[in-house]
Image (tube, rainbow, N blue to C red; front, side, top):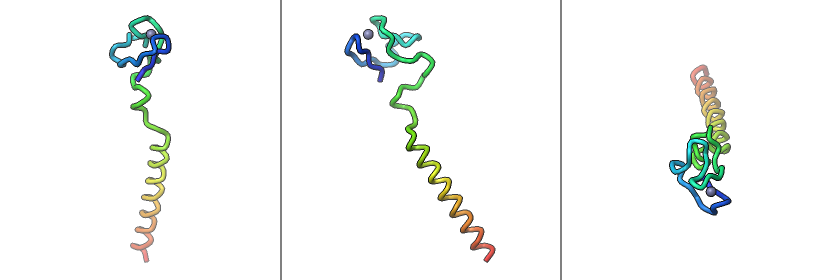
Length: 69
Ligand SMILES: [Zn+2]
């Protein structure tokens, strides 16, 4: 949620202008990023995805080895 230092106030992204300014005219958010920080995918999510892919890949190799043996 965008926070304005000058106003000491949290703003709903919808109440900000297209430029990312608060109603008082202070610049609060980056205009080119539609997603607020709370909705961004954290880096540890990708770590989990990579770990899952490696795990599934390993299980696939094991499965192929089992089929061939
Ligand atoms: Zn403000």
